[in-house]
Figure 1 (cartoon, rainbow, N blue to C red):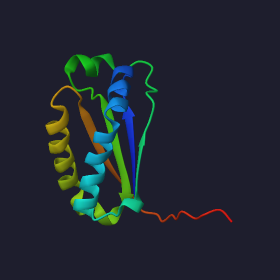
Figure 2: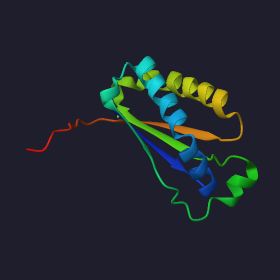
Figure 3: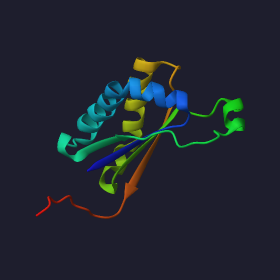
Figure 4: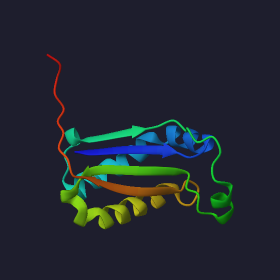
Amino acid sequence: MAWIDIYPITPAAETELLRSQEVVRSIIRYHLKRLWEIPDTDIVVSIHACTVTVPDPEAARLGVLPDVKIVISTSDEKGHLAETLKDEVRGTWQDNFGNRFIAEIWVVFFHTWGCTFPPD
């Protein structure tokens, strides 16, 4: 299972993210399926609203503040493929958005088990 949470850092980034959400979701899904062999039924991509009241002005001044933060959470058995996933997503992201929409990717591994079950 892979849970993906995408957080816009500014209201402008939220607008761009909502406008481009199909492309963003397809980039993430494509690489998770291809590299990690995760089926569609085990990928959840959630796009969040911007909740940042004041982005870090020093990070913005230094040019290190991304427009969006992408957090990919999955089980630790995929750890050896994290760097490849990051590189592949980054390449496809840049092909689609160039430098006008910058993302930072965090891959988080959990050491737990969960399941989804239908209601009775």
